[in-house]
Structures are given as structure tokens and as C-alpha cells.
Amino acid sequence: SYQIFAVEEKLEFPSQSASAQTIVTLAEREPDRMRVLTAAASLGMIYAGLSFMLPYLTGGLGGSPLQFLPRGWSDFTYLIERFIPGGTLGMDATLFTFVSGFIVPLPVLAFMLVT
Image (tube, rainbow, N blue to C red; front, side, top):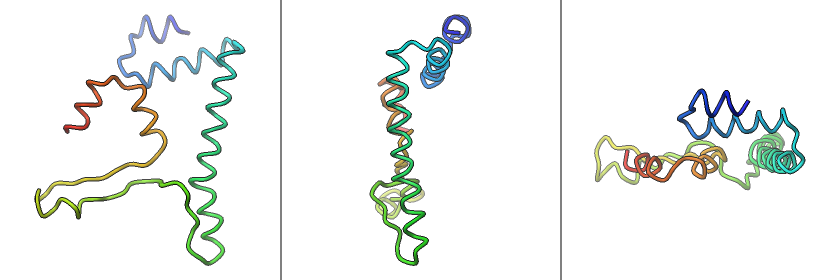
């Protein structure tokens, strides 16, 4: 699998290389890699439960939803619209956005920040 995905296909997007490594880990079942994958999946499920299920369950009881972790898109355009007409500013607070910052090379992140 690694030969097909990483060497022959020459995946140019780092997140795709991470996806290919996940497939290799699931196929080969190496204990050390499976332990890391299981821990990451468990943390992802805990995050999803706190981020999505807790506000859903507590909001359904008639009050305001209980939310510990930010989720979704936050729009801060109102902070810059006087200085930069037509400009937008926002923040995506999903876990994938933060984790992809660890995978993507620094020059690409710098370009994303500028644009």
C-alpha cells in the first residue's frame, strides 16, 4: 500500500499521505501503530462527544446548550469591516483544522495565513 500511495502516486497533499498511512496501519496491524491509531480515534470520539452531543442533549432540555468546546465557524468580520471594506475575518474551530496544521509544511501554512 505504501508503495502505491506514497511512492508511485507521489501524493502531493500531506493529509492524503496521512490517510494512506492510516490505511497501511489498518492493513498491516503493527501493534505500536495500532496503539497510536486507537488512541487518536478515542480522543477524536471524546472530542466529538463533547463538541456535538453535549450541546445537542443539553439544548434539547429547554435551556441554552452547554458547550465546553467551540465548534463551527466564528465570524469576526465586524471587527475589521471599518478598516478593510469588503474584507472578511473568521475562524474555523473544528479539530481537523488544528490537526492539519501539524501535517501541512510551514511555507504552505504561511501562504494560507497571508491569503
